[in-house]
Image (cartoon, rainbow, N blue to C red; front, side, top):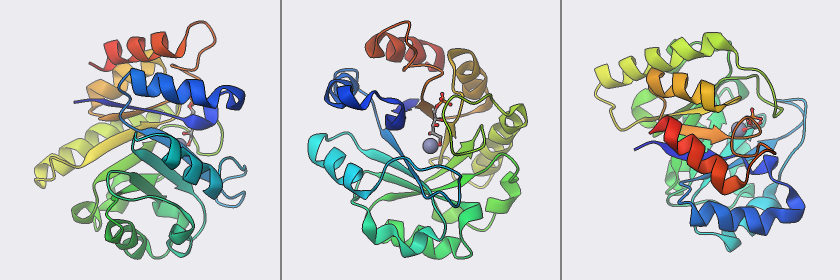
Length: 220
Ligand code: DX5
Ligand code: ZN
């Protein structure tokens, strides 16, 4: 079953409560929380207190996307546990296995994220250790960017590789310019979890519920 993970940095923060209720009413599977440190990516967004508050206010599992240097030394700063996904970037650490193990030791699901220029082959040694792979379909750091098209074949390639190795439960998440149009291509390529941002559910033309319904229709 395909899943939607709306990017909470795209919510109007004055209407956060309303948005979270809409996620709940529409059966949203995860809430995508972008954490940036101004070093791994040139931006800042949400932080530790925000994650804590969100966990207090909803039972929807979080999908915490850490775009930070050396995440293995900062995992303790964040509230997460069973049912939540935490992703660390392949490019952000020399100790990827350590980071993945630390996430799993807390009962959460570990995901490794790769930037557009990082090949799928870089993940070879961790595929057996992780629950998901996050394929960045734009360069991380900002909402509202255009799809890097060369990331689409990476989805297909990774799905084939995972299935070939018997890792059929390892999920593929896509993040960046997941528009209704691009979501269709990503679905065909084999993506399972769709980060929904300004390109789809947070579009101004319709309500959040309408946007979610439209995205569900596309991804099936
Ligand atoms: C990137 C973030 C968001 C998300 C926003 O790590 O998760 O920027 O891509 O979605 P779009 O690209 O639709 O604005
Ligand atoms: Zn993200």
